Amino acid sequence: MEIPAPEIDSVKKRLARAQGQLGGIIKMLEEGRECTDVLTQLAAANSAISRAAFSLIASGIANCASNEEGDADRAKLEKAFLSLS
Image (cartoon, rainbow, N blue to C red; front, side, top):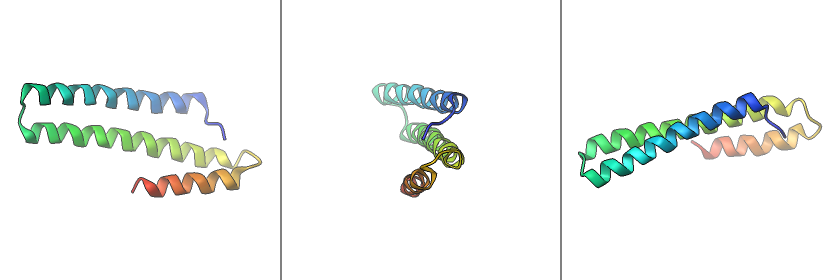
C-alpha cells in the first residue's frame, strides 16, 4: 500500500510540530514549570500525534481500494486504527 506524497507531507508536518512541542515540554520540566502547564502541553502533543496517526490510517484505508491487496491492507489498517483508541 502506498500513500500519496501530499498526504504523507501533511502527516510529517503534524509530527514535526509534535516534535517541537515535546522539546518545549522537556524545557518546561527543566525549568520547573507548573505541573498543569506541562500537562496541558503534553495533552496538546498527544493530540497532535493522534491526529497524525488517524490521518495516516484514513489515507491508507482510502487508498486500499485502488490496489490488488486492498482487503488485506484494509484489515491491517483497521486493526491499527482500533489500537489508537
